[in-house]
Length: 194
Length: 194
DNA sequence: AGGGTAACAGACTTATTGGTCTGTAACGAT
DNA sequence: ATCGTTACAGACCAATAAGTCTGTTACCCT
Image (cartoon, rainbow over all chains, first blue to last red; front, top):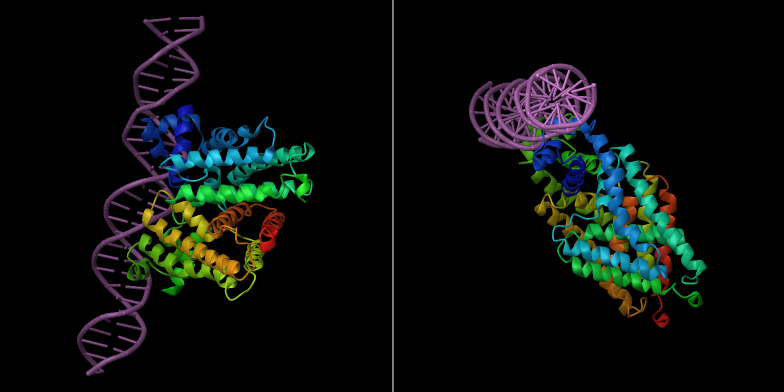
């Protein structure tokens, strides 16, 4: 049953939700329809289950966990994103940002699933904001920085660069992206630089 | 025939390529299968035609044309993006960035179509780079700015924010995004601020 | 007026989809 | 050993997909 979820997320990620049939998943596992519909009510309920467990875990592990218990928020965020992009780059068959892809796919089609997906984005963003705020009280970040705005900006730019990196020259894109981010961060990492 | 393309792009945008059937398009136009397959060989060829004409025109009109013949590149870009986001926001049924959605959908599924879509991105990016370079020679932008990198950053962040703006509070997101961009631009609009 | 072609109409085919339903193997409890 | 429940197998169904094919208009040309 857990293997169904794992394989399900894998195939949904590669081919998209609507473009992946239950049969595709079952074929890969050499299982039958009966097995699937014994554990899950429908394809939709199946995906929601996956989103709330596997997908959330994945995002948390990739983008939130690496931020915990570190000083110097800006550098921590920068390293986290850079490592993530490097992983995506080395993964010779990368399909973009899992969460971003699904948000894109379900937009305007399934509001319920959309809300679950956006919840995950919110969790990520809240973690970023919290980290940035802490950075301000700890004296790492200039007080005039808008934590909410910066978090929004980070999330959106990351989602975008992951979409762009599906083409060939992902190495250059990553370099440029990180470089620009570093430049931007420079303007706010010392409170004296106002 | 042109109406088929227009309606086709409209529905592909709203529901995605794979989730829009030829019948859906034809039903909306009260046309028959015969009409469609008289003009187009297949659904794929149909989309490619749309991408190269209608989709390209749309992107050009939205994001490239407003940049032409203006001084002060950074402000021009900022205004262009802000106006575009405002339009998306007022459009009470917005489905994200057309081009970005398709790139997301076809990634890993149809390399040929992908190449056509990425071509459009390239055109946009080249236009940005050219504008930034001109801005440097005209003295609007600091010489140490990496035009290529900045263009990459602009494209990716725009694609990301459009994906995020599909949820409710798009007004706030737009404001935060533009605000952050403005802050970033401040660091490079005077050559003396190195 | 008549012939020919461009521009469609729409029934039909084949493949695939999500989902149902009946059947059955394994297995612990009594 | 038997019973009953869990965990599947897989045939089956209705809906929908892209694409084909045989018509049938409408209209221009001569």
